[in-house]
Image (cartoon, rainbow, N blue to C red; front, top):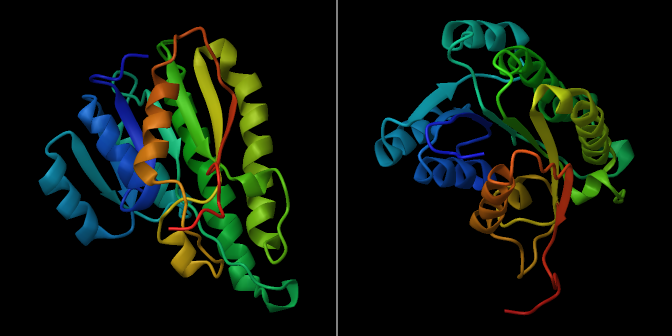
Length: 237
């Protein structure tokens, strides 16, 4: 896919990997609808990135609001070429300490929101049968379980299965689906989730460059699954 002038939708775009992907796509000439809850951060990004960045403030877990935004924004002649489902949430605690609210929020943000947005945009992405690409940000913890990660691992294993099934379903509609499974990335996630960081984490810009490469692969080449991790997570400063 040639990225210039393509329309992209990215979730969790106000920080971390979502922000890095937004900047990388705009540098390639794409038009990006960036979805997040922090209006002030999105306004700052708009000032920095210019008119090709369109900030969208909404709650991805509210299916009604999401449907209204899609109906008011896209049409048969104006539909997304790229969807990056990046928004995520996680808490890491012993199972007896995970509250029902923690569990529900993790499921809603990581799984339900991905389903809501993808299912509604796919209808539009199918219309012109031109090359499209959906990238779901999974995790290494969607491949192997981790102690105190019951809620998060459940959702990321779910994203892995969702992506595999969706890829097989959409490949005949010229829509690629790739599940990207990162190891530890240097983002705010490690400050809010309750798990420890280390000194040699992947940088968001490094992973966003890899995602650009995925998007630019030949139209007949499908990379359905990609695992990326630090070479040496125990490396000292």
